[in-house]
Length: 447
Image (cartoon, rainbow, N blue to C red; front, side, top):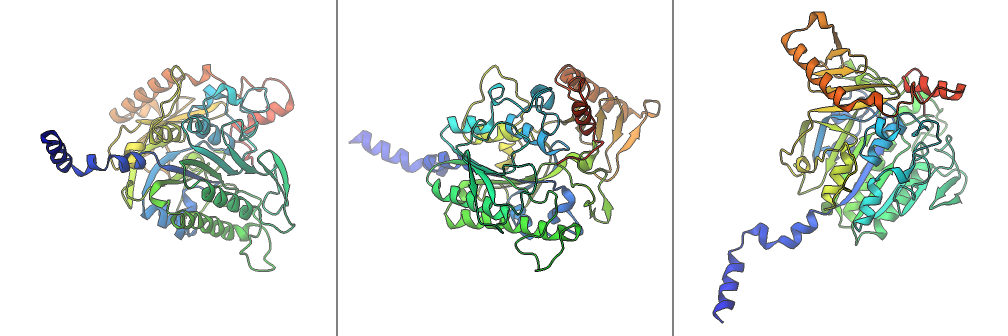
């Protein structure tokens, strides 16, 4: 009896955090939904200061969570997805350009990597994806996704009647807007898996070209550049619908919802931020090529409305999702991922000092204030993303000299040139490979 009384007293004296250990355990293992817009730079999101583009639903998502100011993807679709799936830099994986994740091969080999979906699946998560996949190679199932839907061809995916769903070709009625089919697949997945932890990768086609009318566009509207704002609005609406669906299912506070873009704004669509143009766009090695929006919202966990200035690489989603899922990365396998899970919980964490970005045989390393490329050229980034000021070694100040030394040491340790480099080493034979090399160098934007 005496021991029982002591035990009861001890239980009542436990602090609230310890008393709710079960709830805390659940909170530490959230559902994860990662929404990736296509060809959407900072200038396409109004909460990043975009003057022309208005994204009220995405802005609302940022107000309920955290907005990262300096997140870096690759300057093209395929390499960004490679970094996201693998948690590794391009010179390790071969994920250097679109459609050539391996030098001389049709795509990356999932057996060579430790994909995030596969690892989460092994940890008890249901895994699903919907949308763009074509640059990745193999199928989403090979990369660890239990369920998926994607387009079977490389173009015409907005108004089409065929999709590849779970390995089978599915025909839908003519006039079906593909983003709606993808959205419905996503919502259905969330409903069916609401009682177990899940990871869903929502790879939007919006706002990639061709820029066509949406299901909400005015009747008779001509396709083309004038429909770009319609595409932004439809993308934004769909993000809001996913949030609403999670709320309806009672999953909002159990779900980390992240939103980003795979590279900078494409072709002729860049717009101003505060009256100024970002330097560069999709396929360029400039700031506008790879600096992308990143928003994370997990109500009750992520600080609402916070702007985080830590540098983030696209590789970092891998370690972040593993940590939140309570999973350990495989031993003796080289990752380049730094978890931002502490930051998502409102903690300081251990932010990375620099980001590495590669496209083919070109690369740079970027820290706060400075950038150094593969040619040894240093840039003053104090006015980024609008200006990247070259700094000649002969004009070095104490600050630029120190930055040059730091970043040179970083690149020397990484040694990208010794890895897989499509731009020169992997494109020695054949005209097609030479064209791939030109694309890798940013000379020709690609889908």
